[in-house]
Amino acid sequence: METYIHNLQRVSLHPTTVVHGVLYLKAALRGSFLVAVVLLSACASGVPETIRNASVSAVSVAQVREGATGQYTGTRVRWGGSIAVVENGPSKTLIEVVSQPLNQEGRPKVNGGDGRFLAKFPGFIDPLIYEKDRLLTVVGTLRGEVDRKIGEYAYSFPIVEVESHYLWKDINRSHGNATDWWRYDCYPYPYYRYSWPYGPYYW
Image 1 (cartoon, rainbow, N blue to C red):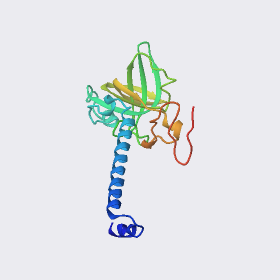
Image 2 (image 1 turned 90 degrees about the vertical axis):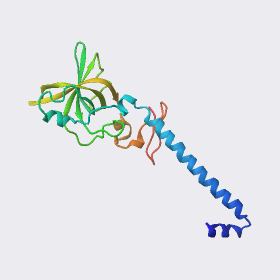
Image 3 (image 1 turned 180 degrees about the vertical axis):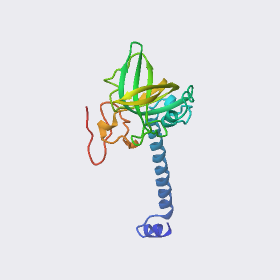
Image 4 (image 1 turned 120 degrees about the horizontal axis):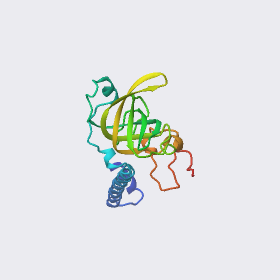
């Protein structure tokens, strides 16, 4: 700092003016940081509170499948993953989900996985919206298991009776990488965030 002020004195700047300028710059940078934090919080706030801060057990799909039959019935969970199949019935819908670990706010991380489960919804779920491979997070209560087949393989699916859910934006199709949290859309339609050095594109 002293060297910096001395050099500036040589170009006829008063040291007090320089110090005030430096302090002002520091304050401005701190203010910019706070604004950035607020903006990022605003983006994250699009996820429902019932998903982000759900009060649930940490039990996993694999643990339920490996446990005794009915051991976890009645347990409240927050699970998610990629949609495999949507099956609409007369009064309910079952969505088969390939389970994946969730990040802090409940988004599937699109890597790893510990099995499959069935998310049970009341009423109709449109399979053209809840498409195969879209990411889905559900909060609900375990209601036992059911044996079904994946191809010719017999598989035991835990059933989650859904209380709340969140269908995540299709980042894969928009940006090619669903794991980068900074690429979440936080812009009004029709603009979408883009990755440097490429420009924006539109619907």
